[in-house]
Length: 629
Image (cartoon, rainbow, N blue to C red):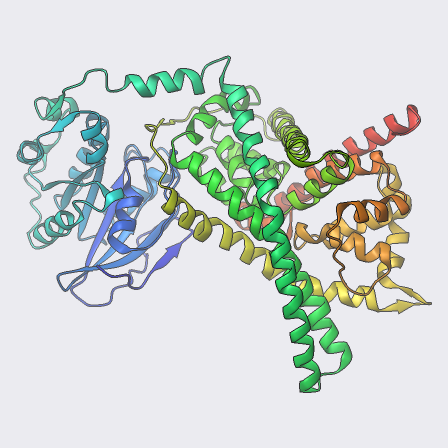
């Protein structure tokens, strides 16, 4: 098997989908199935493409196309959206049905779950009503064996009248049988007259074909569910997992960040020497090195270590089957806000990147509820805001501590602010649902997959490829031009004062009403391309320097901030504004694309900014009333 031409699409499939064939006789294979049956894992195993696999309903809203070869035969595999039926009640079902009926695929591989075969066979039967060129792939045979479930694959094949192959895709077992079955089906004529007998009840088809040697095979998962989704234990466990992830991120990111800063500092010196040797003008080399390069290097050094820790932790919760339980636990809260429980999943995606969270809102069927999720996604702080939050917490709230106590307190403060952002999401979702976006919450199907031991190696690869590189690339692309603009603002003078300082002074009268100062507000504005550069801009402005400066010692940085008028009130208001303000440039462009409206993009900018400004103003008024912090 080999990896060939790969094309990944972000829009719904239609009949005009371009198929990337290498040879004329390549077989086009559509992979269909319910969510959580391992369909995308089968796709990955056959093509070698590390497509992200999720454990929640409707994860694969877009499609991926990959190329594979077996015994000199080429295959173009298309991973279509996971769905429970083809009755076109949701975008996932509509996309799947359209592609199967389009005549594009030569063979449809219907992936089923060996542990829940009766339930997942329903979709396979519906596919057989549309075409005879079907291969039924009974995946997760290893899980079924662990639970002492025996399946008569040959007997099931006789009843269905199409090839049935057992696989354990996570281990790469049985995939050769899928290729062989696809070859047989692709070479036969479609029998339009023999489809009727293949309909019927999945329970009748499974009768005698599936034997449960251990009737209590579900009891271990049920015990875990009683704990992780129980009324008294669900919320504490979610908070514990959230706190643990942030604590590990804070503790583990310090040393790698420092190493990266030292490495990039060395490269900066070498780059400057190179430009001097080339004879580049002073203004050009300083803008390229001290402007563009330094901003990009700062963002990589600050972002990469936390992402390399947080994303794998988050992905392991997903891989283990716990993340769908989070959606289940939070469904009631969102329903009270007249929103959809799937919004909890898009909110979770927003922890990594708000742009990714906005794209993830496609899994919400209702246009009204989808729009609510899009407009409120930025209340969840993305990875780019963590450096600002963590730096202020360490300096002003955990500075007098050391060792474990310091990291514990920092993680606790950060978790509290995260919960505040989640609370703001609930409030604004409710406010929108009773005003401009009125409506009742819709129901949705959420399957709770079995608990599984995460595959650590694949989790690391998947989180790095799917999330870390994507988010880091987005930040670097936005930071490069921002670095040039910052350098120009800091090195262009008007009446003996830099443009940067002039802008900060102009914003000062407005900023004080929110417990901030002109420099802080300007830093957030100039940090619109990437939130990671907010603190470096503050340092540059306070020091009146022409380039971004690094202050690695929290005590030195705190002294600089205090000397420029910072108090505990300033620290709290800055954190609140960092938590609740406009989304970054990439997220805004994504909102424009997803909604097709500049109006809703403007609303997505205005809503969190208005809420954050109101909260900061309330804190400022309260501080003034009690005589300051």
